[in-house]
Image (tube, rainbow, N blue to C red; front, top):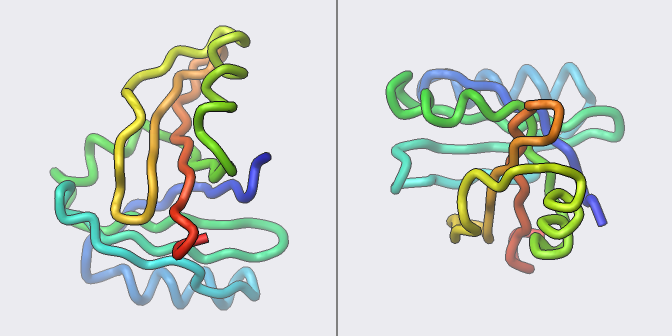
Length: 126
């Protein structure tokens, strides 16, 4: 089951808080996630609303660059069930399932070429 879909926004580290505030106000949403990703040198925050959710990825441009080709992040209940569906539909898994500070992730290139990150979160990060 898809739990939430996020567009991705990339900003410098000092723009994280103002960007969260902007999307919170614009979407009448709320900040639902914030965590440091030290292995990547980034900090991430999510603003969720009924109509749109935004994943804000903050850090220096050279640290963000490897993440910028990925257009969406889709949170699912269990990665393995989606990997089977995506592979059957002509998707190409670009990386193995990896741990993150809040759960697990992998990336797929869909048959149409779009690169999407799929995540499942540990229970504490729902």
